[in-house]
Image (tube, one colour):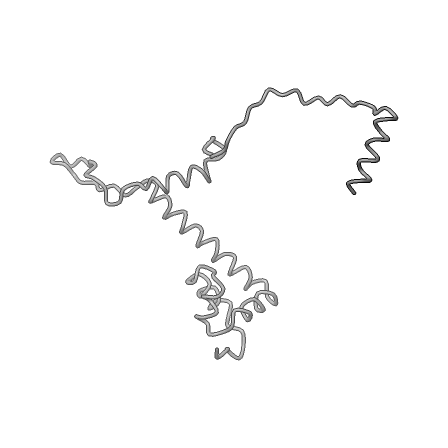
Length: 147
């Protein structure tokens, strides 16, 4: 790749980071440098590392926004003869998969988790017992034979 002779400006870097969702290999391809160059710029200047982190957070925000649309759906609204808004169907129906994903990840504290509950009525008390001298001798011989 034809690498730029010097580091690009932080303003340009931020624009590229945002356009690429903070994905370093995509950023490198767009700038025309090796991915390691991006890493080196981030190591040498905290502003560049922060620009990537900010872009990655924006990317997650975008995904969450789209997830919200998938969960809620996009209703079609029309005006009736009195000018009142009313539901007229769906532009995009709510996604059952997106709803389940959201409940399992963001609704855990409300009990939306997949787990198996195991209930057992077990007395876990273990009563220690001292071996007799003969039992200790036999046990020692057994261990020597096995190991």
